[in-house]
Image 1 (cartoon, rainbow, N blue to C red):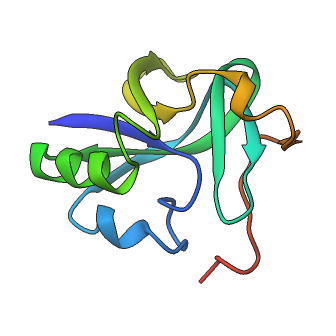
Image 2 (spheres, one colour):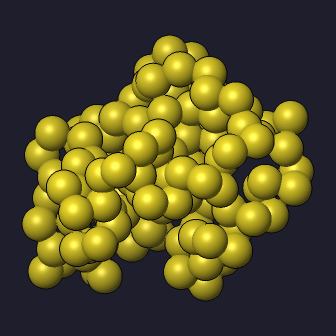
Length: 118
């Protein structure tokens, strides 16, 4: 099994959470990073402040599904990081700030899109 850190539309109560329906929520946690508002979903880079999200234990099958959903490796990159609680997790992120220069930073590091929340 693998742990994945989710911070946007894959979180519980959001539009893409159904892709984690067979996964186990381990805890809420945070990682080092900066969140950007891309409109219908957020993205992060792995530097700067804090990004808050959820950690799930997933199967290899779910990982393949998430790779497709997140457009890995062409749209998002994926790497292993350590959360603030010391868990090793995979996270999807933007590799470079250059695609995010005209986007707003989510200073709280917490994704909340009223239109997306179920």
